[in-house]
Image (cartoon, rainbow over all chains, first blue to last red):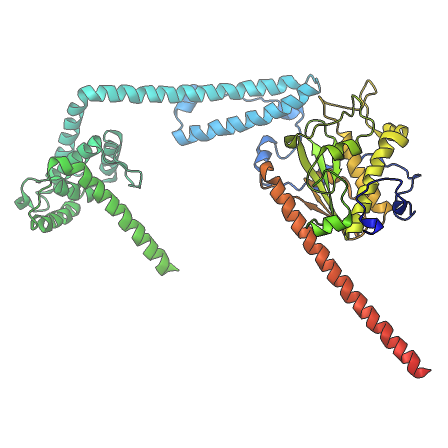
Length: 297
Length: 222
């Protein structure tokens, strides 16, 4: 085995005594090299920038001095849920920024912390008032639902009567009323999606709205020959169409085709059938969308 | 594998690249050099000459050691030379030039080495400084340093950027996969070594043929 292959680590081994191999014993030690942030590249849209105001390390207390006031509850009551949701997160992010800056001032034992605390309190007030408004709305909805359980039938009867008695219901105002009614009472959304699940309430809504449209427009459409709607498929066909004379006419022609098959869906299968109709409709619209986008491309 | 000194022949025949591994202790910030990606009692006994309360003998607990840097050199001889040099500098800082080293360290209000808990940042900063010193003293070229974070490398003025390339260890993976990452660096090191050898071979062959041509010409003229 050659000398170099000896498994030795010894600073006085003869083969290492060559001047060119070892470092000089008179070498001057260098001071420790400090790490530097200049070597780190931070992308401009890094999420942690959300804890910084305009990417500044810290704001002076003058910049944080707040001459406004917190939102009041009556002002917040006029805002939609989406607006309140946005406002909440704007407040939250601002409080995060203030908390980070306040921590730095605390560490330095500075007296400028007061301005940060004051603004933080203002924002916190806004945030609990948002919660107050949402709680009021939630309580109102729960009360309305509880009341509806008692007087709901009377309300629906009244609505039905006013719809049938009104001369012109083919207006945006009545379309909106119908849409709000079916969503708030029966939980039927205007736009169906994959998460739409049919339950008893949903079914009740389909029957109510379908029957209402049929009763209103069947005479004007000249289709009194149809008679009573026999099963959920017929009711759903009317429900699906728009709340107009033409809509009911179209529905009636579909009902004619359907009646040729002599099928009557039993009550126990109603939910299943309506769910199937909705899933088919969603699938159809997805296929149409894909075809359209391919054609456009 | 890391339990004794490994010579160039052993490293080459066991599939290691000409690399030196620097590991940092998570608790104390102490750094240990190794020829393989492992820490054993051998490295600790070899590199801690005068342990004291500020520079305690660390344990070999595997979860406390993280790769800090991997120094890749152009040949196995240079790698072992650099390893010797780093250990020797460690000896100087702890024994022979202790006062000089202590004067350079950051102190707290009680003139102790600045610390927070058991952590002393000076150890890793000194290791970076020794790396820079070794590269300059031994005039090493075609060097690559894979850092755990480029932040640790410090300012560019301490490095000759024509001779050293600074890269970052892939830190997208978790710390549990660090040995996989080190193994990938080993493979990259072997590839680089092979390419460098091939380049040298081509250059030497070209030089040899030129010399032969010149000699033949001189003979013909004579």
